[in-house]
Amino acid sequence: MERQSWYDVPGNEAIKETFENMEAKHSRSRDVDLSAPVPALSLAVILGLMGAYVWAIRGTTGFGGSQGAALAGLAWAMMWYMFCHVDGQGERRPYGSLRAIAAITFGVALGGMTGYGVYVGWVQGNFYLNFPEGVRDVGAWTGYLALFICGIHWGGNAGAFLAFAAPRYPLGLRGWIARICAGIIGFLLAALIVRIFPQWFLPFYHEGLYEVEEYATCQRAVGSLRNIGPYVGLFLGFLAYEILRRDWRGVAIMLIMSLGFAVSFALGGYWHTFHGSGVALGWWKNWEMSIGLGGGLSFGLVFYLFNRPVLPEPRPLPRFRERLWGAAFPLWFVTGSIIANTWQGLVTLHGFEWTTTCRILTVLVWLIPVTVLLALWLRSKASTLPAWAPPNVLLLIIVVGLIVSLPSTLSMKQYVLLGTYTVCIVVSAELYCLLFLPKRQPLLNE
Image (cartoon, rainbow, N blue to C red; front, side, top):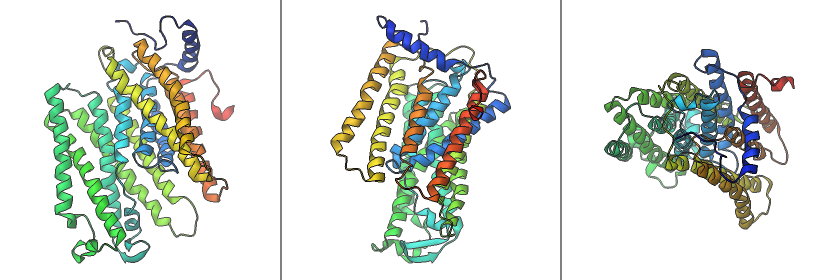
């Protein structure tokens, strides 16, 4: 079956001509060997710098939790997919399929279901019974270790989902059932362990502090442990299964992603020691940007090591369900969530008295044309996303990120933060242009 462009729909000649022009505009590039060290490093830097930006936006007003993490995941997924196909080698890259979009998006989003704010005080050497009261000294290493464990599951499960998108040894139905069961067993065992042996993880547990209901921060620490532990177990269950089936490529991806995020979570935690230093900067945002930077560099390393165009021939054409669940649904669901959360961020940030009906209408105004475009793409039976789609999704994320980062009155903290965001965005765009758009002058020279 011949591969088709997404807009190649019979009877829609005007639409086809319009999208052909858009495709031509966004697909001009030169031949670049992304397996070479310098281009590969440049891609990793782009993924890292933009990761720093989107991870900071992930926790900004209106976002947070799994929905904010989905924003970061979709941004990385769009960059990953764009880099897979920018040189025309996407169909020969193991992780260049549409499945990788859903894997990265929802793999990163999964980590947003856990909370870890209680460990910030531990990093500072402060153990609060009921913040800000009842403070005791605690070893800072306990906070860094807790943050390291948080990163293990966040990056590890994202790496697992990505590894599942293209296993070296394909799985049948029984294999998938066994893989899922391994994850569930790990999840349940970890949930059981943190409940039976909380003293292994919680400081001063033998003093009975966690049994006092009035000690809200202690109760929060128990909740965080019970929340995070099972997701670490989920990752370890998936990892154990891949080790047993000797899919060493998948194992390596999972380990790189888990350790990359874990180190970033832990080392970035040092920013929290500057709270109370008298310098009124966004230390929490600096920590978030450190996580995004390390996470993006981890994606870049995985891309360089395991996503080279090594397949002997292009992969088979994707089936409808892969195109639907691998690309169309993540784009539809997450971009709709982004619009809804941006609306909420504006209401919270500026105190607008907009009704829920207004929010629903705003989301519908976005989703209706997006639904039409995705339906046309699904109907076309195209094997890839259009070249212009990933950069435009990234543009949406960049714009909404800036929107929810601009309060009515800017303080020095906001000026520094916006300046850092600008550097991340401009340097990333400059690197991309230098690599792939030689006919255009670099942005900094325009």
